[in-house]
Length: 185
Image (cartoon, rainbow, N blue to C red):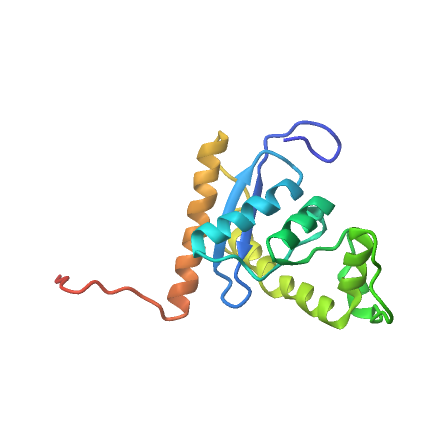
């Protein structure tokens, strides 16, 4: 993968889409591309495939923003909350809600304006309690900060396995368990 200083490193970019209420991972993938934006629409399509329905909205960090992504989500009737610029969390808290009409031109300007509204800030803020903790739980809580395998397909399988383990733990903690009938020990 090409790093930020334009050198090649042995690394992978793990992606996960997380349900806002349960912290269950509903889509996961991994690539050797550093950029996040090309992975957004395939993740939304994977959500639809896994759940047999399309999400109503998507909140993602600035790395996933592209005008093409926002337009495609709009065509898919999925509301986007994706900042076009990296913004510190403290700036979101202190931003004043804008007044007046939304800009008619420019996907970036409309998204910036939308995310400054009370509704936009509230929806985008959900990321702090949904996807960010999931990555923290997987990386820090379970010690999965790096992969020990080589090769894209092997590492993708390991990532998806780790995501499945995360989901099983969440389901167990929620008291959801499967007890097959007729099993005797």
